[in-house]
Image (cartoon, rainbow, N blue to C red; front, side, top):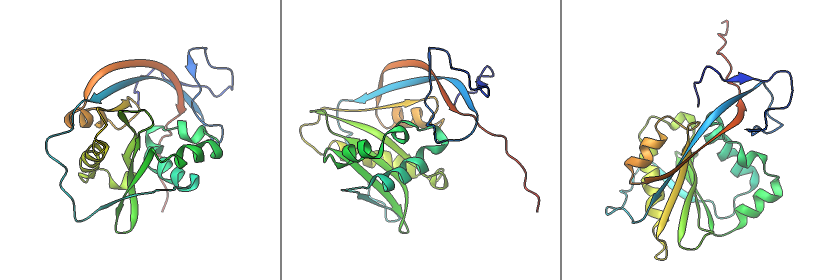
Length: 210
């Protein structure tokens, strides 16, 4: 997330400048802020030489026919802290069409029977795989599960022999370690873009009285 002190909320409801993308879904209540977002595009042209080692404490299960409701549970749970809005803005029918495509794979990470993260692989373009969405629920962060799930997702993306490129993008709204994690996993940066957009303005913590 941008820490730019020039970030401003728009409590008046006046239109945003023409160069600002109003990204926040209308159903999310609260003041908006305008931030500059830097997006990094990364790719991998060959599979890592060492396959991922299984873990005994977690399981990855593909949701072969996920409902829009279940998918949004994953998407909001993982992406909420990082201002993921795109799939929230999609009508349920449009999202259901994407999820019904067998070339879109939603792989859910479970621990003790509970979903704690997911990786979405998009194979709709011949010869390449986009790691479209990836992340953990907030309570699972900081337990070394992220690097393992990323390695698992990369390994799974390359299992199709026709794949010659795996790519991903991350931005300055994502977890501060996201870009470093992708580079450490073997991705190489090939492009960058900047834009301004709205986010739901962070609210100060309010101490509760006992």
